Structures are given as C-alpha cells and as structure tokens.
Amino acid sequence: MVLFFERGDVRAFSRISVIAAFFLVLPAPFADAAENVEAAAFIQDLANKAAEMLGDTSITLEDREARFRKLLNNGFAIKTIGKFVVGRYWRKMSPAQQDEYQKLFGEWMLKIYSSRLGGYSGQTLKIVKTIDSGKKGIYVRTLIEQPGGGKAIRADFSVRKSRNGFKIVDIGVEGISMLMTQKSEFAALLRKRGVVGLIEMLRARNSKFPAMSG
Image 1: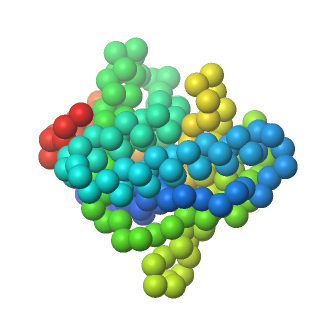
Image 2: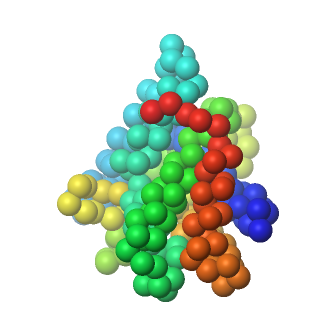
C-alpha cells in the first residue's frame, strides 16, 4: 500500500502544488460583487506574499520551506479538507483518532506542497474571473501561464469565508478537483485497511520526508 501515496496522492498533489506553490502578482479581478472582489483579493495577497518569498535568495531553502508552510497553513482550510476527504469514516473515528488524523493529514499536506518549492521555473498566475457558487463559496478562475509560451493550465480556486477570513477549500486543475481526487484515493485505502490503516500510512509517509525547520 505504499504505492497508494506515491502513485495516487503525491502525484495528484504534485500537480496542484505547482499551482499552489507558485503564486505571482495578479491583475485586477473581473468581478462586481463585493465578496467576489474580496475573494480575488485574498488570492492576490497570497500571490504577493509567495512572490516575495520565492524571490528572496538571501535565505536558505529550509527557511523558505518553513515560511511557505506557514503561508499554506494560513491560506488553506486544512481541517475542512481533511474532514471532507475521509467522508463517512470521520464519524467512525474516536475523538482521539480525529485529532491524530487531522494533525497527520495537515502535516502531510503542508510537506507535500512545500517540498516542491525547488520546481519553480517562472510560471505566472492570471485571474480570469470569479464565480459566485452560493453555499459552495466563490470560485476564482485562473490561468497558469508557462514560461516560453507553453500551454496555459486552467486552475479554479474554491474559497470560502470563515471567521478568520477566506480560505482555499479546493483547487480544480483542468476540471479535476483536488478534493474529489484525494477523497477517492483515501476511500480506497479506508475500505481495505480502515481508519487505523490510514493513520498508520500517514504517519509512515510523514516520517519519510526530510526534516524541515520551522
């Protein structure tokens, strides 16, 4: 079952992490509703902070990883994502298992993203429009433009407003949802090995990442 992460989760997250990790300065959003403008501004703010971090060659890669992990932790609704991707199995977990799972899932997700900082090669992110989806939140549609004129990648950021401001809850890459992809991968493991198996696998996978400061 080690291939569960290597072949499924890591590949899915690596595709998305290229987008999540390489925000750059964005143009003004095409939106009218005040909340839509706020949602686009939220993505803009993440872009500005990431651009500043990626451009700072005076710090080590480890320091950049630590800073980027903090940026992701503040920008993504990690607990909401973690609960969603285990579906009905969430209710089968004891409170202690829920706490451990959320801690391990959050650590794994942050490590997956931040470990790919070195892959940046000049991609730029352009906001196309915002779409109000009611209770599902707001979609900020973007294009990831490749250096050298390669084919741009469409990425839709799904954001929701909470007491702590906007958070990213999903990223759709060319129509493929991060949430649904991850839920499918986790469901396969949960059916075979249950909650204990998922927790054990997350713990094992996290231990294989190199230690990072911060």
